[in-house]
Image (cartoon, rainbow, N blue to C red):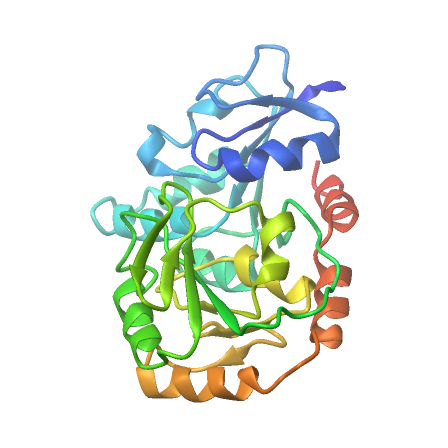
Length: 279
């Protein structure tokens, strides 16, 4: 292990826990990196965890990686703290985003970005046969219903009573919601994505949309309002979503083109190679 490099992630542990071993570096969930870490990678620059620059206090080389919600937090914060974006420009040696749209948003806030390194999923799935029963996943972490349009997704499910829908996400509990909607709670992606035919994912804001990528790597179709290669795009709208899902329902084989594209674009080896360019 290279103890001269430490990844610190008090706000995005679920991602950092599988990313730091790729770099063979040290790791801490705390707001303070080990004294002997000369390089600190702050994965997720979240204001809600205290001063986002605190983990950098003793590091000689400082790398910040914005991943999504932390960009929204920064935009809101800078409205009341004009000029403080220069603290990030001055104190952070390398400023990265995990998606091009996030880098653009940060540049608009005055942050001088150095690059984009896209975050891969924890497990890189291979394509598998579609289930016999058409089943649509809905990512719906509790407490973030507005962010992920959970109410709208349930309206879409109600408009398609012949189709099975499955809610899932951290903090959810298994339950039957309606005749065609079940809450699965937290799922093991590797074990359970093969039981889905498609994913419906609407969101207000995102970086690399890891959930849709996981499904597409497995050859599943995705309906989303995000501009993602190989996904079916529409506005968060019942009629538009139903139309796309009905089209997908006719598909009997996995989307091998989408699977190949995303397994080649987002994987652990490529992420490690790209990150090492900036360390």
